[in-house]
Image 1 (cartoon, rainbow, N blue to C red):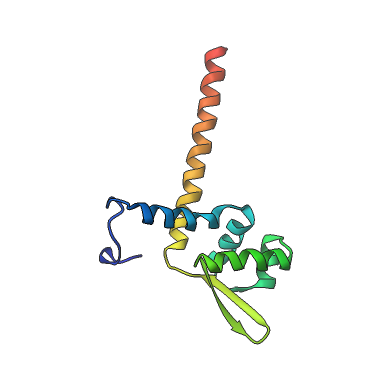
Image 2: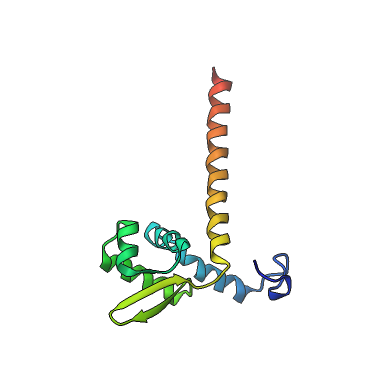
Length: 123
């Protein structure tokens, strides 16, 4: 958990440059393959080969997506001979990933509730 003095409050005004930087960082969530890689790293450090197997991606695609995630500072890499070991870059990422998933679950629940209410109204 982050120390309260480590960051500005979430309610602090957001400058245009900060908003642009956040939008650029959110590119990490632009493809399902990158999200699956991040999820696989919640369990801890893994090699490209282990990540490819866990996410059912080819090693080439996993490597390409990990490069994007590394450039966006969502993952960090440690080299050990021929192997690259990836881990989540920040201690904030598990909570961020959980929040994104929970938000999606609420969206799905709301959609299902709306469909059920519409069906009940037309019956």
